[in-house]
Image (cartoon, rainbow, N blue to C red; front, side, top):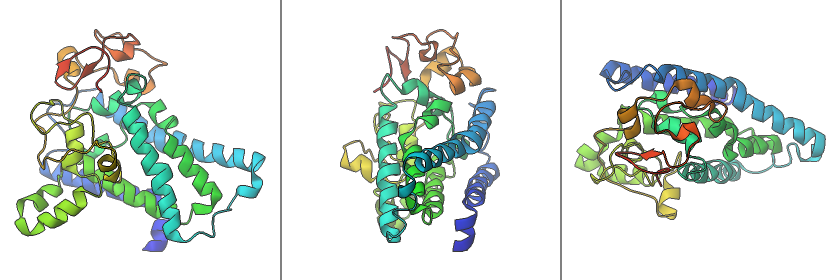
Length: 296
């Protein structure tokens, strides 16, 4: 099994995503009544682009640059024990992704991350839903590729599979943590998990449309794999409840942005009224209300 994961991490990730999708299909939550015609093309396009263009492109770019300028560094850290390799990935990938995600909720980078929050539902479909340049510029993707070049490729497939399993679980409508909250005997396990990794309850809160109900918490819960970062930097919020609605209020008010605009902004800009993707200051919205600029 371990050998299969090491040799075929992409297959393992696909199986994980399809498993969550199957559970959502069985429960009737894979398709949402709030969905629009812009959702499937956006989600399909960016998932394919990330897997076929962005990620392999970064790997190729890092290895090409490394062999041209730092050939002696290739495999230089391969002697490290596995736990030190994992720690390096947690620091240079997951930790930097926390800050990249947090920075993406500021006016400068919000347009590149807005597509992720425009989904009017939670689902495994939303995992890769983002602007092309959000991933192309993501520090963690580049730093992970550099670590692989330095010789940490032996543990990377396992790290990647575990991380994607957690991320898929945090976005999926299966709400696996609800079972732990309902049974008193399981609540200590729930406490341990929600203070360690991202869970549906903590991540759904981040996607909430409304922020004044004690559940929604748009200004925090940024963690991807580890939720520890949110606790260390004061952005954690626990409610053990799920928001009534997710998505962006501006899309309810003005209609969903076209999928190619969400994917390719700023190369393509929106013509919709009151849109950050039009490249105009003072027209952004936050969950639950129409306000100036971007949500904090």
